[in-house]
Length: 171
Image (cartoon, rainbow, N blue to C red; front, side, top):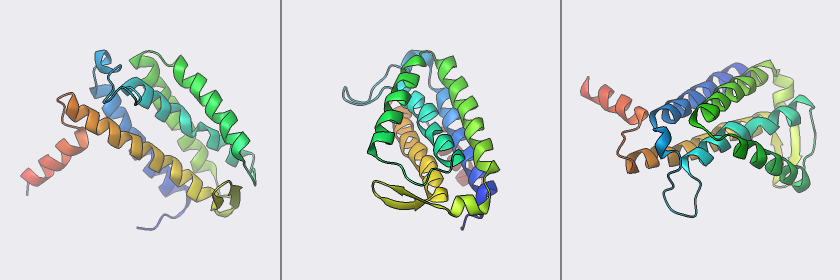
């Protein structure tokens, strides 16, 4: 399937965020400190990261920045890290996932085709604004895959798996 502009990208991002919110709601708060191994983020840290990490896109694409460098990313990562640490409870994290998800979705929806097609120079080469925003969705899906595995480790069957199982049973 080809994407055609901000509407499809927005709808797709909202679907991804909705699936992330389902996981955030299904994992009990007493398991938010769970880590698959000692050297990875906890459930709470993963969800806070998902909630905060894509918000830099609003600054970059809202201001139509044509170039971003390592220093920009380092600064944004530091700020995001502080914002992530401020999200302490399950309710704080779910609120941030909800509010930031809708803020980013509305922002993406506001972008026109010409803006989405603009090229931005980043340390790894040029990318269109569209591709960069698609990357935010892919980043969330990467971490959501980690959360789905953690759900299995906690004895839960992820909602997307339950949905697929129900579809298969109805065939």
